[in-house]
Length: 340
Image 1 (tube, rainbow, N blue to C red):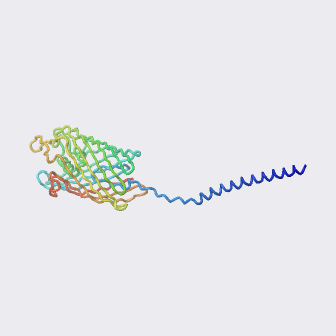
Image 2 (image 1 turned 90 degrees about the horizontal axis):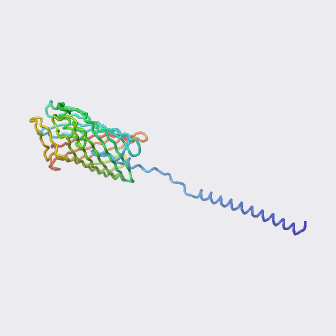
Image 3 (image 1 turned 60 degrees about the horizontal axis):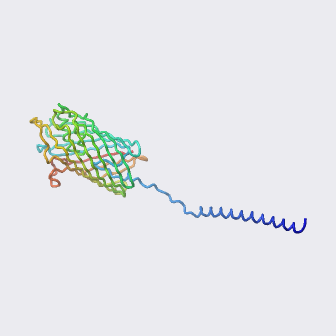
């Protein structure tokens, strides 16, 4: 082998060795850069899941909730008012509500009413089982805004109805409609009532602002010759507003306004004369205000109990200048909803 060939081979080996070394260095530098990028990156911050606005939603006293879920709720109103003769009447109306969330948007529900009345004179004291109400709520959330659509119907099986009703139960139903005007469809035991409504609310930063609108169509099923309402059809509209605010995580203050008005002009059958009597203009509408605190406690991992108490005041045609006791109710509402 000549000297030139030997030098050429040595040069080739050195070139290949240098090339391999450069490749290894480049690879090591690349890996080091990646490791440095990973190790020098700031550690991920511990993320705390944002609280669901539904957990800081203020439940109304007289309006429907815009949230859905598995719910058991006992809501009782003890109210006093003057009857048609100016005598003091006392009524306690309790409504039990249950709902079940079948998916993210729908929840069927049922409401049952149990009422008692301490009327002037022992002969008119009584108790009654109201018409059950069955329905469903569709709820949709968009950021801090919530929409709920509601449809329901009452089942005309309540006591105190028919052509020969139990007088005590019938008078109790009338008193309960005064004590809880927002649920008067349940106390119209001779009617089946179709109810359609919508609620829209802003729920954010601990504040709830909600508006509600409802239409009710009453259709008489029984009691054509009984005392009380005689219309085959009657229609009613109701509107409501609710404002609530959380002070901390476990306490909120809220108030709502409920207004209802007959769209038809109802008539009743007088027990004294047997004649049909049209409802007076002053009784065509009613306004009720409720205000009070509510507490919020977690039960288990997902459940909440939200007990509250409110002062309820009804106003007649004289408005805020009316005496404390009028033909509309003044009372206390105790509400215990459990969400799970």
